[in-house]
Amino acid sequence: MSNAYEIARERYAEHGVDVDAAIAAMDAYPVSIHCWQGDDVAGFEAPPGEQGGELGGGLAVTGNYPGKARTADELRADADQALSLIPGQHRFNLHAIYAETGGVAVERDQLGPEHFARWIGWAQDAGIGLDFNPSYFGHPLAASGVTLSHHDAAVRQFWIEHGKACRRIGAAMGEATGSPCVTNVWVPDGSKDTPADRKAPRERLAEALDEVFAEPLDAVHNLDAVESKLFGIGAESYTVGSHEFYMGYAIKHGKLLCLDTGHFHPTEVVSDKLSAVLQWVPEVLLHVSRGVRWDSDHVVVLSDELRAIAGELVRGGYGSRVHIGLDFFDATINRVAAWVIGVRATQKALLGALLEPWAEVADAERAGDLTGRLALMEEHKTLPFAAVWDRYCEQKGVPAGAGWLDEVRRYEENILSKRV
Ligand SMILES: C[C@H](O)[C@H](O)[C@@H](O)C(=O)CO
Ligand SMILES: [Mn+2]
Image 1: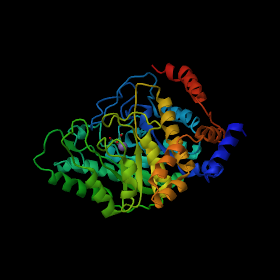
Image 2: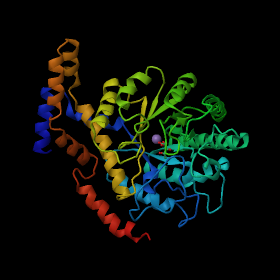
Image 3: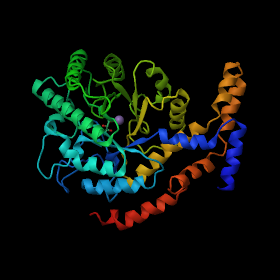
Image 4: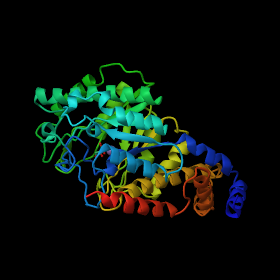
């Protein structure tokens, strides 16, 4: 055991914190790693070489760093590489466009668990859970940017069937992996300019969701989530699935509410929303992202807000009610490194929260000692967190410091750079 860790243990003990218990508690916070960082949200519907068409849905990936995954096998290999550099056991989050259909075109409303058999086998071998998402973008029937709330019943029905198919796939994933799959519905539906009618699309979306969710599925295998958004590129004036819309829907129907940290006004913070929405919804799905001026989906870093979110999770005892997922995509840097940076940052925030001597801050607050509250919060920021993080990484058999980057560079040289 390193001297630095021993000293850290003593320093935290002075504040009543058991460092070993904090490290052990990290196992209760798996992070769902989003597949789409590995290939810029391209998916495998189009053959290799023809991928990367119009993404649509207000989503935008910038950059063309070499080496992106072109096949599911490459994406799995890249994910394996990332997972080997991240401490702990995690989950993997797939979109429907990552189906493997053996070169045969299968429409999204026809997708089934068999098209994810290799993903499921991979997850079983790795001992990890899977999460899932219907893909309501990058498709001719989503070209207008409107899907489940479309005024054309035929278009709407196509997307309803897609949603139903995806819930069944999610349930199959959950059953096969022995861990419930969170199947998250996000639709881009909205309007670039001021709509004449805000009401009818919302009525159609509510009805369409009712159809999507009509089939009862065992929550042991599948958990339904719904994700709101403030606006998207090309849908600046109106978003059908706004926060209020989905908050109401989730409360009424007992669904998980997905809070994407990039989907609110920049002065709003998800850390403040957690204890509010968890009064009313059973569970929350987090999409941890980093918006820079807008929902730009930058790689997650150890920001004040990420630390605040982790603090709320730990202090609120929400570990079992909040599912942590990541949602970012940056094509200007090594994509495997992007995963590792984002997940490790999230874990640092969680470990920092588990180590925080919160009881003494709460005591000061209860006693009306607001000076003491602020002073202690500031002092806690410089407790020797790094030595505990290093110890946690060592325990889990992954590099503690920036050594992981050497591994990624080796992988880039041997594997990624050969992809042309
Ligand atoms: C791929 C998307 O990021 C994802 O489906 C959705 O969660 C989103 O955040 C859209 O902005
Ligand atoms: Mn999201």
